[in-house]
Image (cartoon, rainbow, N blue to C red; front, side, top):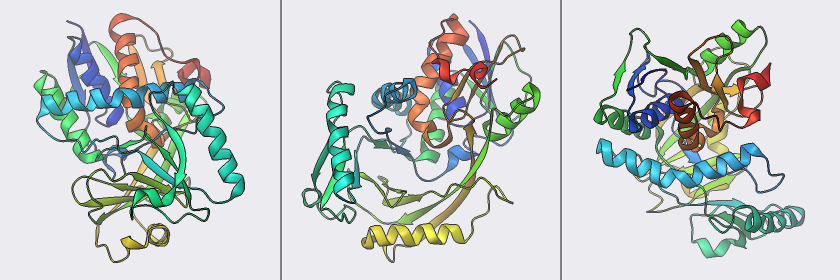
Length: 345
């Protein structure tokens, strides 16, 4: 049995640990702040694809990962006995004007080709989706069936439970053994930048809200006015998020979150008066390439990087876990060129 130590108990670290354990490795996860303590402990949990055009390795990787999500999160919940809040509920986006309508229809044709019938992207009348739909100036919305949602804190807790069920350990301190995978968030990207002598990534702060509102079973996630509105299965709705490159405090909320709340209510008036259950802020790891940063740590034999999930970490996690387990345990390298650490140098 191979020994693997994963540094970091966010979504990438936990997912890689889970994949390695399922292949028979001995795995220890080490994070001094605990499970999901950083950006992975937020509220939103929107798993959504990029638009189906200008296809590239990143979009193809994300597409495969979103298709893998059903099986991945089902296995996690079965092993841990804990719900993750995962469901493929689809997504609705309002269409602003005639030009946007033309682009949306062109993208629908692209999706028919690129998505190979495994998911759909359609332009539909907004009236066909009941009351849980954002206002649309054209009366039309984009509906895709690939998008899903989960509850980030519950998903991380369930992953931790599955890791323990498979015999893995999760600790706040300890010495590394065997191969070491560094999934240490924005602080890890900044440390890697210092070691390599050039910026390969940094942190971008985000703020989000959790509201008490029951949108009903299977309510689609909404993307409108530049924000995500995600109905969870426990009578809550998440709204996010801001994107802040400059910030004084990594975990403080401020008036930017109030403005985000107002935009959400304007887009979906039924949220007016919904009690605010949680105001969250955290710093998400953004690689300079805007793609996940995966592969060997240059100059450190037996050390690997899995970082840079930024806003799409939960959606990318099933596929990231697979390719990292391939590399660390079997020496098989299926990492896209644009994701490699060397590509940033």
